[in-house]
Image (cartoon, rainbow, N blue to C red; front, side):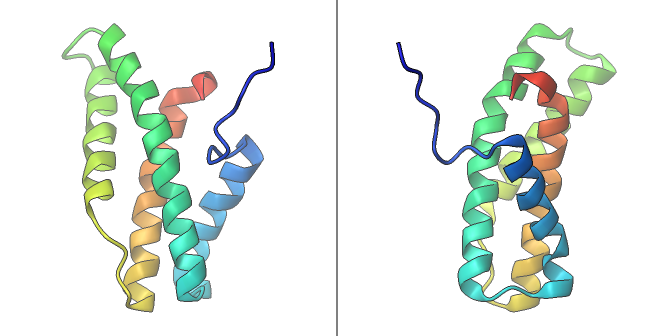
Length: 114
């Protein structure tokens, strides 16, 4: 039976490239179209990773360091999803780096589950 994969989910190499480009955005200042594409890609990754890390929290003892670190990362990710992309080039690029930090944190927690 063939499996289907979410076409918006980045491969590990694709995720690495997405994060690298997002972290470089304040220096390279991509145009609005590219900033929008990066924003969408990062948001898709957050939406993919949030349930994975939430499932981990559900299995971890409440009050432990592991629980609190994941809880903080999830809180930050949800907060980042609420923020829009600024039309200002620099502000938009800084928003991309904030999204990328959240994606990287969740991806590190998700480990082999993503």
